[in-house]
Image 1 (cartoon, rainbow, N blue to C red):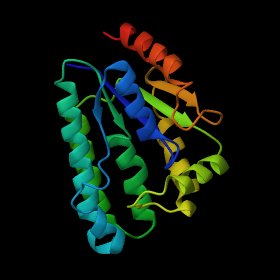
Image 2: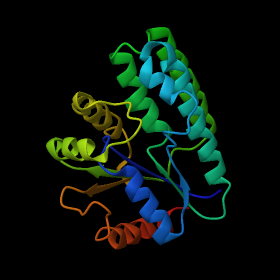
Image 3: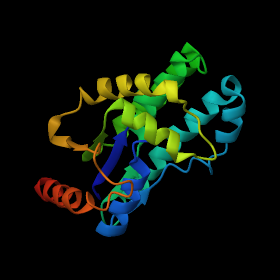
Image 4: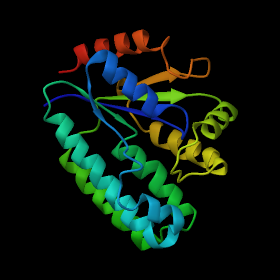
Length: 204
């Protein structure tokens, strides 16, 4: 079974950028968010309440399918975000905002729980951290054509993120301060690749 790495952090911090760079430079297999390609995203953007459940179920299934595919690969895989981030952060955010009701959230939770019983946790979680004001600036600059979260969601996302990561064994967690890094991560890639390779070498 191939090893699985996920890159997590607040919205706009640069998860997809780093994931693409690591896959390009390190030869890892990618599992990307596909925010434009997903069947419910555009509908969810225009009608949060009607399409929130379909969108979240689709994302939880997408991430599950990606994990299975990457685990079956011939080399380690890297996801930008991943199943656990989608559940512990975004599903909870949408419950808090009223896009999901309690019964719908419980359905997502049941799905996530069953998947995690069948599939192991990621082997390495790369956490991209930066001050909230800097994350907010980056979020405003990324200008996605289809954006689900809003700037005022970022403090809540950070809270959910911190709460989830507090329960993760430190041996799985690689914290990377990206507050001073160039937008394309050119100066960061060699050090992260070295740390990832070192950790992978120590795994059974």
